[in-house]
Length: 169
Image 1 (cartoon, rainbow, N blue to C red):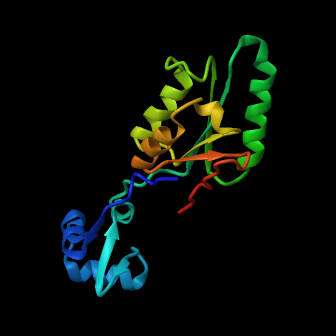
Image 2: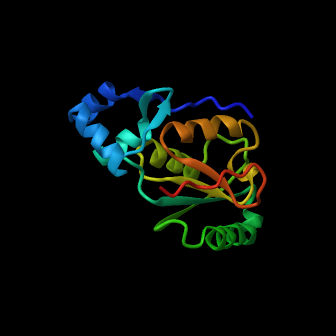
């Protein structure tokens, strides 16, 4: 599976400027464990996510539980999906938001999915949980995963198929 979004790694000087601190302060923070660095040879590099944390820009520990059915006659299955997601996520997240849609997986007019994507774009969520990948979309799942990753969110499927476990940092 190709990974399109590789988080950028910043050199010490670049990261220090972004954080508004001196390079030595950043090195001290790394030694104390306040921020993590990746070592490339003899150089420290800081990921975008690590730089966001001290700035207070990290995503909160909130997950969207997204359920979808194709027709109104499947409302009972919609409730079963929501209950299964609540049980599967358990206490992994401090807060969950339930969003549901009734409509085709091919339809682009799904309010629940649009709201989930908007919340990811505004960095209000850490994950979108679904019972099965096709509940999110029939085609183009990789594009949606990439979109969510670009805003620090993950797609999490409770069935174990194409699963990406949520990161709880």
